[in-house]
Image (cartoon, rainbow, N blue to C red; front, side, top):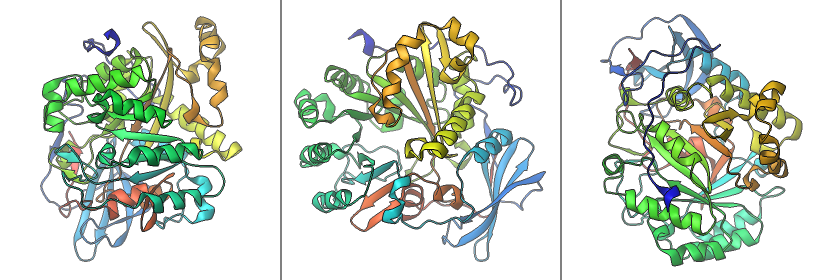
Length: 474
């Protein structure tokens, strides 16, 4: 089908200067803000301390006092372990944006990584379940460190009973892995959850979705949302990122998702030098493809199995936002992401709805598009902008029905969402931000907040970090 065809990248200029500071200098595609590795050294001086927090030693996980300090425009984390020495770790290249985001997030003063108590579930937006650690792929980067052969598969009946015991509002349930579609009893499990009122999202590499009969089973079970691994529209890139050709599989899987009316989120791991120059193309493809609601841009991290990303190659949300600005020719800017955080903070304060809980590690944006015109929804509050885009009123009016449950949003052909999520790894984990997590893993052992589980508890979470090292921007 023509809507699932590759789009060609368009050459665009960098965004003009914004109130957050001038736009970065032009760069060669595929080398967003290149960084230079630095050898082990003594901690450099810094301009000022942006904030104090707590973290852990990457080697022994001892809880340490930590500081986010500013050098020029960049932010680093400083901490020192009595046994393993001093750590000086790059966080982001834009200290002003970092501080603005942190001020808008609900970061607690008392960091804790304890599992949420039942009375805490009102704050949780979603529950994640690793239904298996088996996978039918061998990606060089895999934050769950999935295996070809399952080493553990939880008792889904036990997990179902625990989900039933959650009081009040039912959280969204993410079925992940490994590759969840490898479990033979997955579809009945999902059907039961959906029948009992849970919104379920299936995260998958798409291989099983090539089978139309399997898609039909999922649809009959009541599944609405598919979180489809995507990454690129180019076979060489996919082969590098996923260790096998995947373009035909992804297209056929997406065609079946469209055919059966699933709401689709395209999950794109962004790796420096591999597909960081393709973000514009991915966003353009998504907004022109039916049933694609969201593009989730996931800057590469060092969680789990990691054979591609060196510390100095790690991307941040700011790097990705720069490419979003390029894609939109400046029609979407950094301030728009901050605006959404402000609104989320206000809505969360007024309603207590966990859908709107603001966090510094995940940034949301929704925009209206009509031809080449892209308008973040916050801009439509300006009467002049709304007058120029008056067709947006009837086109976006159905959004009002999903105000209290954003996952019930209908597909609107003139509306697209962008999500940028930074995963906290062990070397740079911020315990204050991790305590603000609105997602929890459910295992046979109980509940753990997602940020802490991925970085601290999951098998393969350990990451080597040399004492007194940093990855600094040029």
